[in-house]
Length: 305
Ligand code: ATP
Image (tube, rainbow, N blue to C red; front, side, top):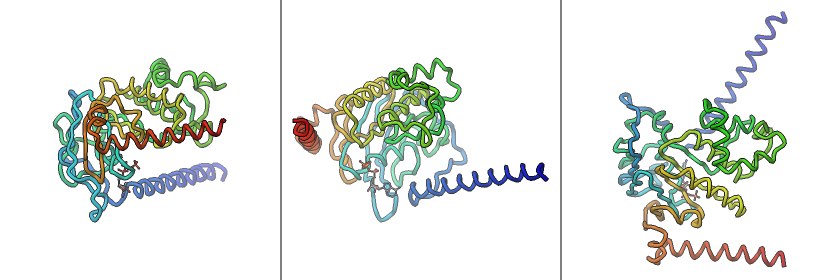
């Protein structure tokens, strides 16, 4: 009887795991909104990235038909360039990243990578060409080493250590008694927002994709952490076509082009210098962020006086 019971018990465990997985998938679809899941075209080919140029051609998009989110959004990111998108909360910035990753299909227009419409290529090939540093990185209940190596599980130890070094994580890891063997995630050590983002950067370094999406964290980081992240991001975005979804203007001054979005449209574009000189939306946003930064610095100063 015992022999029968053990496998049955194991089956019960598997059943519970599967049910949990289904619940998680359902939650994921809820998060993704009302649109049907994306499927590969029957004749989908593998994406071929040659130079790595990205084009958003006259994109219109709505999560729900009665509420347009993007209206005639038209821009390109030349190979190896960094384009940053700024604008008020809800302007549609992160939606651009979701569309490039093809979580949704555009309603009108097309997104092309080196001339290939992303609706005609397999999702696997598309997603393996794009690295993402998200706002909030998911860590597994496993060691730090395994969490880093998730970027490319077949990477050698040397490669994982190098990625951690390039992501400015080494000092942090060496400060932990168990180093790379430290258990992290919900049931382990909790990492700060900045540390998690550096784990994501290390994963991207290991993945080594030609295209990159950086979805900057909204929460402000302390300036030491911000400097470390900026350094790491600059290294990782060298030579890669990069789309930055920016919440703080100070981090994107060096972008080749900055797009300012308002109400789902691009209302201004240019370099930091050009946009400041133009005296429009961007220069107002810049002035706003600087005065609020100054206020919060003054508050800190007052508190320490
Ligand atoms: P933030 O700076 O706050 O991150 P954002 O400019 O990145 O904002 P998006 O996340 O692109 O804004 O969202 C644009 C609009 O689309 C918002 O009004 C948001 O409520 C809506 N939206 C986002 N995701 C969904 C979804 N899955 N289903 C329905 N509406 C959505």
